Image (tube, rainbow, N blue to C red; front, side, top):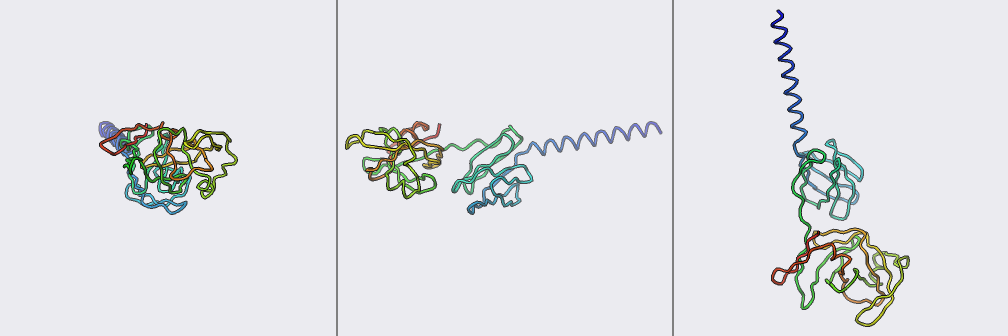
Length: 224
């Protein structure tokens, strides 16, 4: 009788141990997330095959929190892991502080137009056309464009800058978001120049955060 009871206790102990191991293995597996849709302030995520509708601050049963929505990109957070992902993109969350899929490099490819490198991008979610200008200290945009974007540049710091036409008055401001290709920067220094015409100048307040290379005629910017 004592032998049977001892055998039963050992069996229960082994079963409990196996269950614990299985639970640990399951918790260590990465959680696959797909960004399916972004509708204004609402995001549809597919987490391990299950759809969830989230607003900023909401959390899935798996512990994934929607931290921010930025045009066609969202920021997700789980534990101490935080990452930015575009619409249709996949993200793999594992244990807190654990390894997921390698982070995708943020790059922008810019082709020449005549003697200039020109590309489309976004400032504060507004579509603009940038011209790369390695001689410009900041991103520079015209007064009329700043007004269309609703930027109250008069609250910026007034100053002066040298241009091809001579010295001109400027207003130094910060742009909430600047996107070129896959590269996204926040709180970027810029200058509003009242008499500026043509494209927005993509200056060193953006370029200094990138590595610039050229492959044949294509300029490639890679976020540092």
